[in-house]
Length: 264
Image (tube, rainbow, N blue to C red; front, side):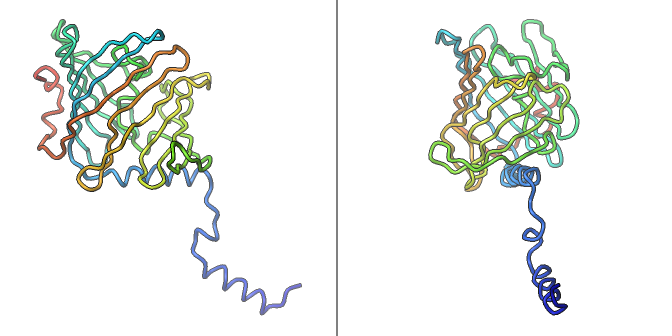
């Protein structure tokens, strides 16, 4: 039996250690902490605008190209608001898409169809459908708020020469098209590098790759493009982003439902 003096010494040592050294961090806690740090490092940009070239490729490699402009408003205490306006080709020019992302309740999404001159609301139970024929779903278009998921850290891994955390994200949204996502997060910059999406049968469906990050305003990292590959159909969609602009004075009125009809 240890002496009382030894017991006192051991207790003194334990209580002098930092809390994290006494209580082991679980994979779930670490996964959440990584997601929170990603979110913390990307706060304060206010609003941003960017030009987007969307390239759709079928399983035979044939391409169709669409151009749009995307505007985003950062919302304190809730998800971001995003407006996408298509400029070409002619058959979809003037189509506009508005998203109000939310952290703990279903996102709100509307689309303006110029041929019909009306606004269509996207059902909250239909977010897994393809966004204008692309490999991105309506669910993928909304901002990724921390409270939308539960998390589990899996391992560390090197991806394309960068050290990364690998975590699983489990959607809290009951109508999600995914059972889980496996996310590679850059250890240095806390930005996503790759996401594997698993469908409702827990089979690998798609992989999203982030390309060539650039830092803006001395703080915020943005990719030059994204590529979404559908492993089940052989189709892919690439988004090339150009001309990022920040803090241009956009406000809530630029993202109300009437903004869809007056989008130019």
